[in-house]
Length: 64
Image (cartoon, rainbow, N blue to C red; front, side):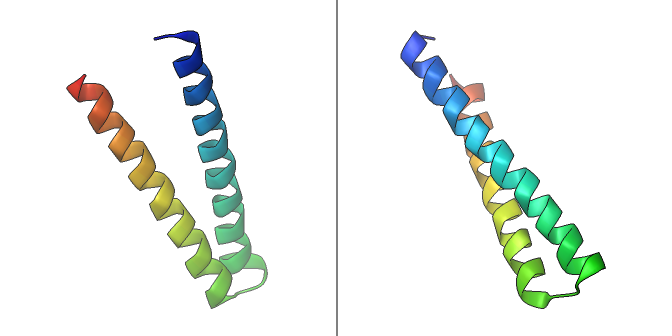
């Protein structure tokens, strides 16, 4: 892995982790503290997107 690829990977997963953490907090907030269907659905969509990104990367990593 070149230095540029490592930097790209680090930035990508920094964004993924921030989105995932924010989505989990939003999910807790939308379910527990202020029940809101819109917040809950938004959090679930964000978590699904994170899962898809991680799944694609794991598949490409395994194939390499």
